[in-house]
Length: 74
Image (cartoon, rainbow, N blue to C red; front, side):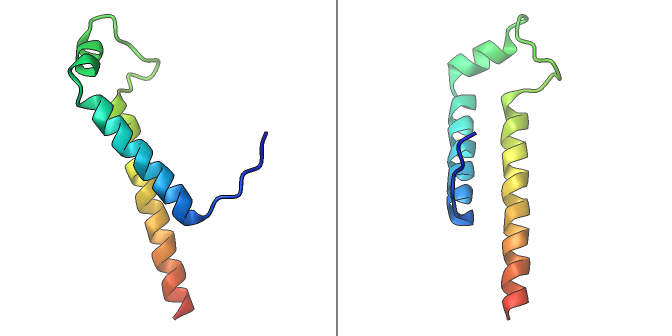
C-alpha cells in the first residue's frame, strides 16, 4: 500500500469534492434511470444518496475534531 501524506485540509477538500461529484451524478437523468430500473440492486440496498450522506457525516465528524482542537489551543 502506498503511503500518502495529506493534511486535514486536503482530506476535507477531497471528500467535499467527492460528495459534490456524487451529487452531480445523482442529479443526472441517466443515473436516475439506472437507479429506478427493476434490475438495479446492491447487496445492502444502498443507493448513491447513502454514500453522499456517509461522506457528509464524515465531514461533520472532521469539523467537530477541528473545532475541539482549536478550542484546546485557546
